[in-house]
Length: 234
Image 1: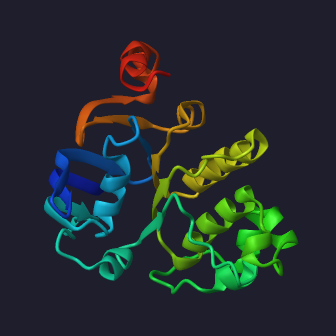
Image 2 (image 1 turned 90 degrees about the vertical axis):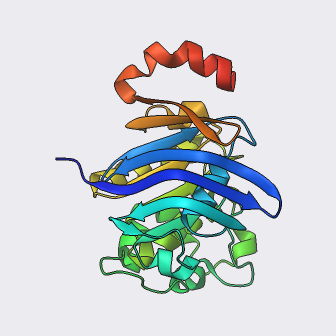
């Protein structure tokens, strides 16, 4: 039996007068890794931001664990067990890595302890007392994800976490996602790096002009490579 953790129906979203999402429909089952593919400007990041209530306005339906959240404030969406890691990371530069880790509030039981975080991210243990500005891009990205894991969130929205990072760090992030999936986390990825995202995802949604234009499973990836070439240039 699959359990729908996130169900989006006819989602429209705006930034001011700009109508960005035009009737998005998608589902994410508990324990899945789902990737949103598309060119820049297709609406993938706006979909993530709409889920957590960070767009200007939105209408439609966003159910998280069966609870309608379309009119909820962002802090109430978070308390449904949702963690959002934006592309800009948001590390506090003047705080140490460990102080950054200690900042987020607990939103649900089951958040990872500092020791569990350091076991998963040994780099962060080594840099625990280093200020945010001294961390490499890869270490900042690990820290941004690790902060969410402290909160108890079980639905993770990860936006372009591999962008601009060295291949060895990207590989570590891939291992992290597989580890989290094995622990029962549910993950939605927005990724430009197709080679990073392709082997990780159970299912794919392709976006174009604020709409879902195609969805398929990991087992159908090979058969859809021609279509992906057309939409993404991969």
